[in-house]
Image 1 (spheres, rainbow, N blue to C red):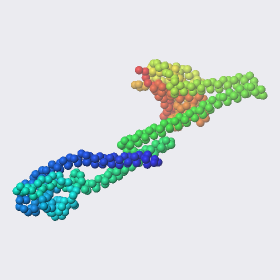
Image 2 (cartoon, rainbow, N blue to C red; image 1 turned 90 degrees about the vertical axis):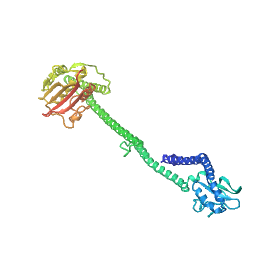
Image 3 (tube, helix red, strand yellow; image 1 turned 120 degrees about the horizontal axis):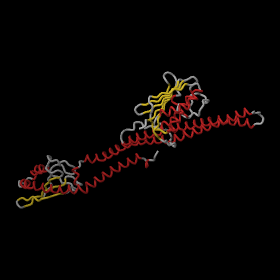
Image 4 (cartoon, rainbow, N blue to C red; image 1 turned 60 degrees about the vertical axis):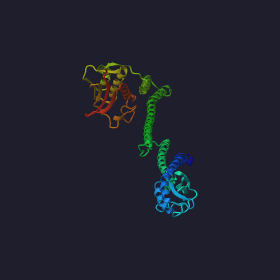
Length: 463
């Protein structure tokens, strides 16, 4: 928890209070420096105009000799002067103010009634002598109606009291707004802390649509991407561990055989005749060949997956390539007791492919049938095409794939059987998938409706 001097909430609150205080100070300075001189000059002009208007009538009334007759005249002219006070001061008497009908008759600082002295702190803005028959009988005075600054009559007293209340209300409103802002920022902070601690399932609930809301949405999106990346890394780590375990097992089995046969041959205690020695040596050779094939397939697959194997693309006849591969394997099918058939909808079908890699794909698909279809079965190979795609289908009438196996057929070292006794490295179909993907094609496994398995390779036709 941040201390209050470093807290964003208190910083923003102090900022808005400071801005309000500075604004109020600038308003006061503006009033005194700019507005006050303007108001004083205006009041001075109004005072001169007021005296000029009232003087003739006051002189006429003064001739009657009754000062009380001046009260209604003063009251009438008084109503024309906002912020000014009109009075008559006789030479030998008290100041005469507007009467009860005038708005200033009951103001604090003035005596009640018509004949009471003015307060000393009122400023005289203008004056003019009243002369009757050549003799001055008094003077007309115009005062500022309120003591103090000239603009005070523009600002009613209740407004002065409302100013600090408005200041407090603005400060409280700013604190409330920034408190809400702080809660949203705290939610972002909590989310970042949770993600930093590894909780990639954390999300900001209802982030909103404003700037902070969009930031929250981006954080949620980033967290989801991190969670997806972590899942991929976990999957890759699991795959790596499984791959290491599979490689270890695949290499351990032939190595164990080689070691056992070698120890038997070197052990003088066990009598080994020439025939047994030859058989042991053949087994050692077979085990070493198995390890070589496994290592070659691993390196080949690694190059394909890493993009290190460059493809030499050329226009090839897929029909001819498949026929050649089938002829090379036909004797093995006959020895295994399998029937091999081939059909094509076209005499020639051109695809853009690397010849060696495409031949490797066809060989792996056919050899997969030799390993998994029982004796007496039938393997059907067919080539066809549509507008843009060439298709190779290898199908059989064997046991087919289990429901769980279909999705994993093209994974490294995957075998549908529980044991690892099935011949082969377990990498052939994984290599098929990588080569197909490198050519912009695809491969899939499925079960035939009539029974058996079906592997389908799709490649783009040559342009």
